Amino acid sequence: MSEQSKHLHRDQLVQIGIQAVEHALIALSQDDPARKIINERTQALCQGKFEHIAADVQRNRKKKIFQPYTQAGCLLRATEDLLLLAVSETFLSGSALVSVFVPCWDSFSFINNGTTESESNWQNENLYPLIERAFEQARKADKVSTKVSTKVSTKVS
Image 1 (cartoon, rainbow, N blue to C red):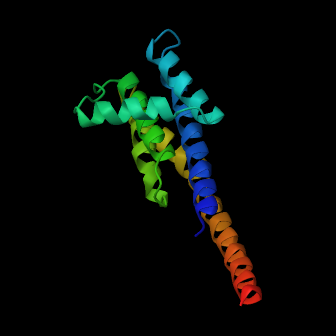
Image 2: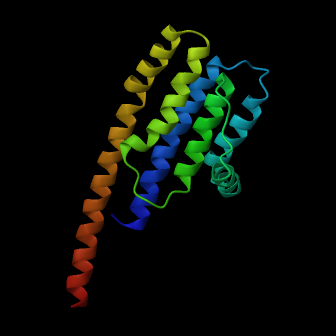
Image 3: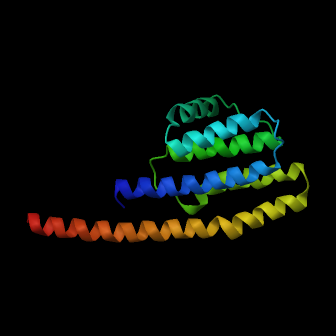
């Protein structure tokens, strides 16, 4: 897979992760101070201006500074993992988003288990098909770039 295709694929997965976080925000109190941080992080991801925030997250992880296990902490952890995925230079598998999805539905456990299951079901019905579509697009893009590179190499020879 070309670097460009890999980055486009990663960006698509990050956008799916943003949807998970934004949907889970419905459970967080409007006046919770973490909401502002979460919104700033998702906006930075949408605008492509997140490298400095991701670097802070990486430093905190190295220092073993983690979010507390609270409703807000779950969503903050989800955005931290999403920021780390956004700066990743490796090819991301579908399971890479699990570190974002799980804290999102886990944040509902502070309300009740029924809402946790509902959020998990929402992700399964709405987000996992988007992941499948992103992989289909990546495969198609890879086939196209392989054909183009093959044609270019035969013309150069």
